[in-house]
Image 1 (cartoon, rainbow over the protein chains, first blue to last red):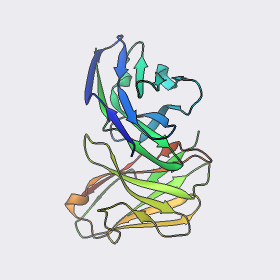
Image 2 (cartoon, each protein chain N blue to C red):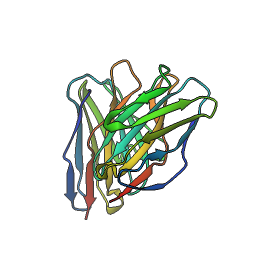
Image 3 (tube, each protein chain N blue to C red):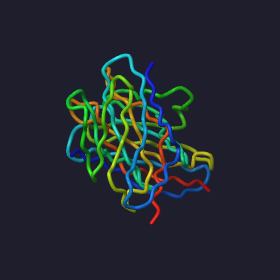
Image 4 (cartoon, rainbow over the protein chains, first blue to last red):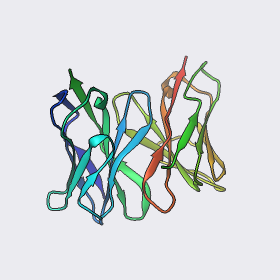
Length: 113
Length: 115
């Protein structure tokens, strides 16, 4: 069975400071990993994805994530938070021939002025 | 990138009525689409897999007679909430995988409020 664990339900940062959203996964096959962002009352927007190419993946809006197989992690980072980054972030695990991703519970990013 | 639309974006209805939500893939074909339900401050819960030209596959605990799914074409899936009740109020989101990938593209969601 595969699973995704987002370690923090809430992360609070000040504008201009770095962001770290943590995600760990468990999978019996080579995973595909995704980060999605959801603003209030909106659908999910793909930020970035890892599909066995480069372990450091760059996404939209200055976000990036690093796949670390030894740590079974795929943490999302951004050097400098912006107020518009405040949203819900979901880590998801795919692959293994299934189109249905396994979602983490989500992390709410709060950005203070 | 692939675009998925949903209509309506929000709907308010009276208890006992039925509501239809449409999910369209705008620039690609989708033989499979997925319907999710999301409660406030929670993750997405997969309700069913919509298959073009065949019956939908429902997740355990989801009433198929309550949530009717029709995938009439390669670009359209509909979810009908029949005899809606206040407990059906939720945010419903659809998605479709991009061609040849396991990347899901999500619709903007539909907020259903049942009075």
